[in-house]
Image (cartoon, rainbow, N blue to C red):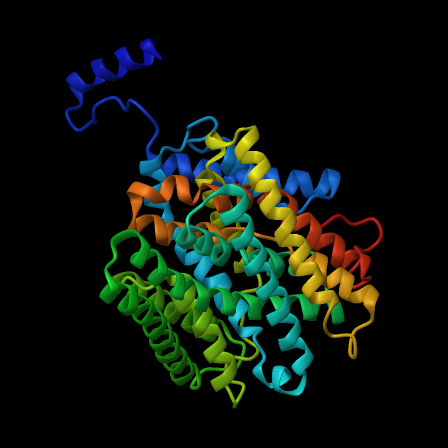
Length: 418
């Protein structure tokens, strides 16, 4: 390196346009190399030992992040976060489109299952955080709101990765979409509780949740209407419709960031509004089939790097493991206790396993809270972040196991690798 530096400096005397010798790799170049590394890690783990590709993406980000090797510092991560915001938002757009309100009206047991597993998860996580860990009432509620939902991006991508179709797959996707919607509502309410506890400002405690909910609903519905209106003049399922869907989604992301409304909430509600308002099936056959995995690499590499693995010790590790266990048992019990009329017990057990992933949505919810009270949120939000860190690796495999055990995954053709 010394020889290269001396040669470069000698050339600078002759070629005045050369910049100073770079002391480190440009953050964008480093991030691009990390994405390639994440892709290779995911493909290698998938092809050699059958792990989900998502595990490889997260592993690459976690190793390169501040908590381990430190190749990506916090400044670089803050630059990459808007890209990950967009990736999560677009994946949640697809999750929202799985929220079939017509099926919910015809199948009330599904709504009961979602309410049972989400309600039990919130109650048990809150009790664990408050009684066992010793968090305050507000931060215990925040921990429960952040971790009660399944990871929609993980469930959606795992189903696609394994070409899964069937009753268990569809029920898992729908329950994930419903409990995601419920957790967003509770998260908005918890914002007010945290405001009241931390600052005693009751005006903000009441106004902030309303701003988040009304802003999310307004942006989501307006952008859904805009996408349908513009796409109606294009051929169904065409590249033009895909472009319109992505462009309007990016518009929603930009408006949400301008108005300080959570991006994940706006895009999820935009997807739900598209499903509800698209009576003429304008965008029903338009999706992001290949784009999902490009988004997934970006999202899970960044979230892997955001994980606070440097704060993991045996105490915090046991607390995070305890949260995962009580959450998992609550969600499993909620599914098993409901839906007996339309789903056999064996399939309900697999659905209870399939909805276990906890991942990027929880991390980005925590980031929203951390931005409001940075002086206290670091320690208060450590428990849900560490739980998400552990489930980043276990969750995709649990979901994959459930779909495979249900016999709903598509086997690979003989002699061919995926």
